[in-house]
Amino acid sequence: MKLSVKAALYSAFVCPGAGHLLQGYKYRGYGFIALTLISLVTLIKPILDVSQRIADQIVSGELPLDPAAIMKTIHQSVYSEILVTANLGLILLIACWIVALLDCIREGVKS
Image (cartoon, rainbow, N blue to C red; front, top):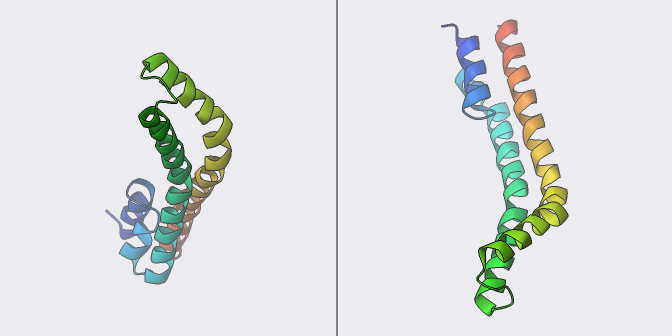
């Protein structure tokens, strides 16, 4: 298997930037990995905040220990908070993945 094909597969299926590291482009590879981690944090942080708030409501007794009430609160939080704030993280993650893959393919074709 050619190195360029292997690098593109690494960038597509392992992590954006992994293919660049395989090709020897360390700074570019670490840059894509850093962007991926930042976007994952941006994506996961709102989810953790909402889940912590719901858990605190259950522990304090504000939210009854009823699965239907808990699910209703989760659904309301997902549609009112998580989809709005996590949207940026998801867009950044997808963009980083696509750009890293295309750049890895471009570098492989150029070599």
